Each structure stands twice: as structure tokens, then as C-alpha cells.
Image (cartoon, one colour):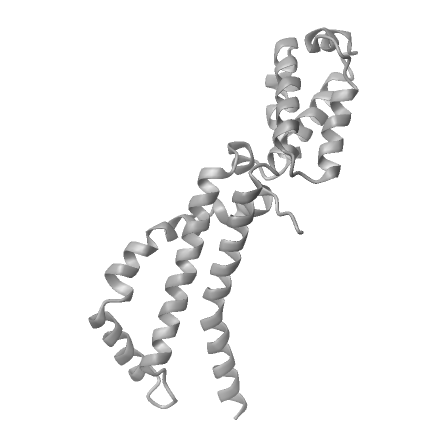
Amino acid sequence: MVTIPWSRLRGIGNSAAAKSTILIPLVGYLFLFNEQIIEALKLHSALEMATAPHASGAELGWRLLCLYYGLTFVAIATIVYALSCPQVCKRYADSVEYSRDVLEIHSSPGAFRGLVGELGLELEAASGAPTGVRNAADGELKLLDSGDAAATWGLLPSGERPSRLLRLLAAKYNLMDYTRPAARRATAVLYATGLVLLAIPAMQLFYRVTLTLLE
């Protein structure tokens, strides 16, 4: 099974366009299925394509349904993303960006100890993460002494501390990127379904225009 991380979904989930679709159910109720507006759309379509075959009422109807359901699926996916995606994955595109941005605030014995503890908790929680991601985090923890992490920090040469921190932070981000698998799969499926539904009318119009030009 293909596993899609949160970082692959953030491009859509963080976009203003996706967030605006949350209002689509209300807009659809007020406008898309309003009989007067539908009749106006039919008339507009007929006037625009007076010299060519224009969309029938039934054709216009399924296009509106594709638009409505496509945007609704995107809206639901955006809500699930907003509620389920970790804040770290919403804010940062990848582990490198995250690690470099928060490196300084972890450069103390106490912060280092906290990071090690957080990484251990994330490793336990991210049971569905890919094996490589889990092994990388487990390997970083095994490189540390079994004693107090703050003491381990004091024993590290100053030149090695930044690279050790970067690896720990990257491992933490990568684990968080695969949390809540059910919500991630639901978000991915809803986005894919919504985008396909939105693409169907556009593809049908492209086909008809191309066919008309070739005739």
C-alpha cells in the first residue's frame, strides 16, 4: 500500500483555494441548486454557443453535480487535514527546513533531553511509519548513552552537537509526518476524488472543443 505523508498533502491543505471550499456546501445549497440560477445558466450557455451545439439541461446538470461534489470532497479533505495534520508538518515542508529553523532552541542540555524524550514517544506512536523512517529514529536513539540525555549532551564534543541535533530533529519530523494513518489516507482519497470530479467537466469540454476544431 502506498503511504502518503502529511508533507505531500500540505501543498493542497495549506492553500487558500482549498480552505475556501469549506463554504461550498452552503454555497451549493443557496446557489448551485437554485432553480432560477440554473435556468439563467442554461440561457447563458445557449447565448454563448448559438452557432454551435450547446449544453443541454441534463448536461449542465451533471456538470454542476461534478462541480458541487468535487468541491465538497475537497472541503471535507481540507477539514480532516486541518484537524489531524501535526502543526510541525503544516508549517514546514520537510525535515531539513524544520531542523534548521528550530536548531538553536534545542541547543541546551535540558532542551536536548526533552528532544530525546519526544523522539522516543514519537517512535512509539508512529507504528505505521515506513520501516526506514522508524529504523533511522531508533538508530539515533541507540547512538545515545542509556543514561541521562543531558549528561550525554555534556559529553559530546561541541563540534558534533549541531549535526547530532539536526539528525534527531529530522528523525522526529519524519516520524510525525506519518502519524494518524487513517486521517492521512482519508485526506488523500478525498482530495483525489474531488480533483477527479472537478477535472471531468474540463476534460469533456476540451474533448468537445478539439472535436469541433477537427471537423
